[in-house]
Structure formats: C-alpha cells, structure tokens
Image 1 (spheres, rainbow, N blue to C red):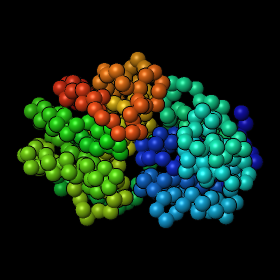
Image 2 (cartoon, helix red, strand yellow):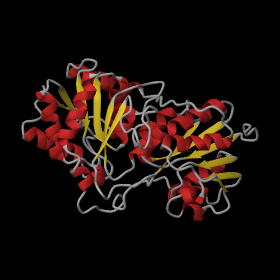
Image 3 (cartoon, rainbow, N blue to C red):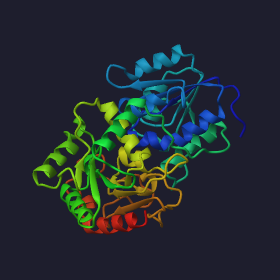
Image 4 (tube, helix red, strand yellow):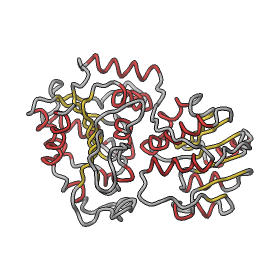
Length: 383
C-alpha cells in the first residue's frame, strides 16, 4: 500500500487509559516517522495526559485532552479550527465516536465488530477498517491502523519523552533511599479496576518472602487516586502499621504529597522504565506495569504480570519473545494467572465480571503468593 499523499493534517483519536497509551506508542512512532512532513494532532483522555502531553513536538504537533472542562464537542471544534483533513479513531469507544460523529474530511474508524458501546452508531458514514485478526496483542492491533494509512515498516518503540522535573524527582528519590542499579524488587500494588487487584495479604506474603531471601522491596503506586479511594496509599499505611514497611528492607515510594499527581506519575515512569534501579517489577494488569515492562528499543526491564479477569495474550506488557497462548513466560515479561473456570477463554478480551462488580474475584485470590514468589525468585536470580 502506498503512503496517503493527500493527508496533510491528521488527527489520531485515542482517549483510553495509561496502559493503552503505551500500547499505542509503536503505532504513533511508526506514523510519525512515515509522515514527518504532515501535521499530527493526538487526542487523549485526561488520565493519559501526564504521559501524552510531553510527547508534543515529538510524536504529535498538538495534543488535545478530553475530560474535565473540555468536552468531546470542544475537541471536535478544535479539530475543525486546525483544518484537520483526516481523522482516525484508534480507540473505538464512545468518546471517540462522538468526536467522529460530525467531522468533515476523511474519517476512519475500527470495524463495527471491533467497536465498543455506541461508537459505530455515532459515526455510521465513516470509513470502516477491516475486521481485526483474532489473537493479536493490542500493540499489533494498533499497528494495523498505521499500515492501513500506508506505513510499510512497523517501529516497535515505546520511547517516551519525560519532563526534566520528573527525572530530577526520580533521581532525588533514588538518592534519598540510597538505591543502586538492580537493588530492589518493585511491587506495584493497585489497578484501575478493583477486579484486577491482587489481594493485600498476597502482596504482603510476597514481600516477606523476597525479604527473607535477601532482596530489598520497594512499594509503588499512586499517592492520590480518587477512583479507587486511594487504594495504594491505604495499603502502604496498613503495611506500615503491621511493621512490614521499615525504610530499610521494605521502603514506601508511594507517599509524596508535595508532588502534583502528573509529576508523581512521570517520576514513577522514569524510575520504573529508565532508572535501572528495579531488578524486577511485579504488578497487576495496570498502567505502571506497562510503563515498566513493554520491551522496545529504549528499555528492556524484567516484569512479572499478575493477570485475572483480562486476557494476558492481548494485554500483558509487550514482549515479542512471549507467544500467546502457549508461552506466557517471555524473556523479559512473565505472566502468572490462576487456573479458574471463569476467566477469559481463547481470544476473549475479558471475563464477564470484568466491567461489573465481581462477587468473588477468585481469579486473583487463587493466584497464590507462594507461586508468584517462586517465579519472582527465579527471575531475579537470572538478572
């Protein structure tokens, strides 16, 4: 397929979550390198903004953020003012569909079967992509959008530009705790959905086992995150009362009320992805794990992913050495999940309870701490 030579101003609409933004990076890098001369506007959700906004001038000429006081109609008006001639919806969700609903020029959206909610109904006259092949990782799904536009060679890069302040805060935190390269196992405690959270008692057992085997543990997470009632901070406070967090063998890297939330996330991104301090990152299926572990030309970090209601073959940190469905343990990222009868089957995106309140969460409860500890020790011994 030849490059689209008629495309002068492109908008990429992708309002989703932090981990989803990481999955989109190879497609964004590919599009930027293929069409260096065109004007690119990237539309993201507010939760993606701390990671997306610093990419202005690198992956996109403009970054628009939907959320808060900025509605989908505001974004649509801004795209009109920018004289965008091509809009591609890579999200396939309701927010993206509303932005696409009254756009002039060329509009491209996912196939109806790959859309969620009312997206396809909001933009019935948009150009529909072919149906996505089954069994692809989300990274490779998103790269099909770049190929549809005419990009020939995918760029598997997850490189991120981070603000100087974020790097400085990360280095300050490292110095404060006297951390050296490869000196800690980082445990990321929370997740954006309660159904994806590994139980607190399992994390405690894992931390105690790592400490007993001579490893220093660092607890990671958001200092303030209202959607989950500040779960990470509350868990660290509990572990501190119980004596697990002592500032030596187990340190708290979540609590810093002096930092704005966006800088806190950017700081943690540098620490987890670029600092080389963690020898292993263990965590639930959530944004920080993908920030740490997606393998590209900029970073190769070892991660251990705890999966339950979501399909690891599609959503685990990207590692080309890990093949779905037969090889959950790649060279860089290992996946652990419990053998339960209610998990996603085959290429299903998630189990039935994922988007509703699960009454038992046995997929996470039955993923035993002893199993994860054994896997973690095997990984750090080969670091």
